[in-house]
Image (cartoon, rainbow, N blue to C red; front, side):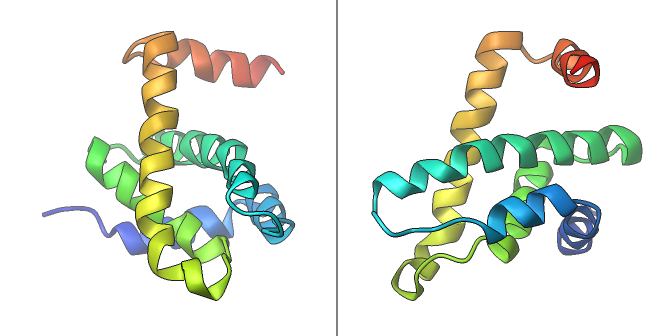
Length: 119
């Protein structure tokens, strides 16, 4: 049986004051270029889900993505006409962020976690 991704997403949101603050500060005055504001938020979200998964264990790659899409979809408020597209758009951004990290570090993200701790 799969993980309760909605509950996990809500736990990550509850534990992420900084992520909530960043999402609340987003503006989308100039589209599409303002969508680039999401990249650092998605990167931070990826690290939050990885931290959770390393502590809780047992989440597959697709489950981690689903958790993050649900969490960010809750937090990011796009203009009403874009709301139907935000889930898929967030999913694509997650794919590209993870692809970039995998290209940089391979499938072992341990050096990434160490770099985060040493900041």
